[in-house]
Length: 181
Image 1 (cartoon, rainbow, N blue to C red):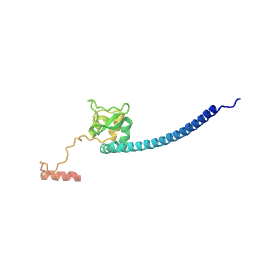
Image 2: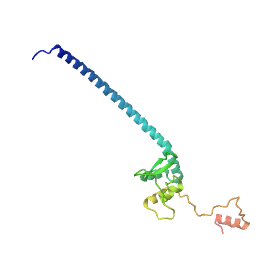
Image 3: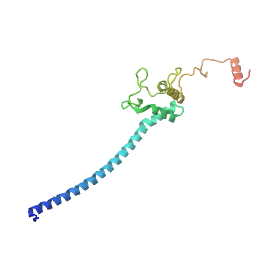
């Protein structure tokens, strides 16, 4: 073998120097990538936490309040509702809305209107009308929800009512309340 020339030695030295610089740059970039991945993971966890807090404030709290007003056991009602539907907030009006689980479209009643998140409309949609036969899921909702329709009772007479009881009515009413006849 022949001895390398000075040009070849200079070129070899330049290549080694460039290689060292490239390796140093590679290590610096890998360290930078690792640092950025760590920052991204931190930001993602903070974003998830913020999203959870936002969901709690915007969806969960109003849904819990609604469930407390319409269900005997609110947490069970919410769990059953989430099996069949999703609850979300309408971005325009800020109101809760019921969505289908499959495609996320608003649930509509038999008139084609979105089901309102009120006691009567939810009861009618989920549990069916009071006097209609019910499916198994409707029976579950009918059991969980409070029926808010009219009881058919006559209601109590109040002090301000135009009815004035006679002495005989009062005696009979007292006798009935004590079980005397």
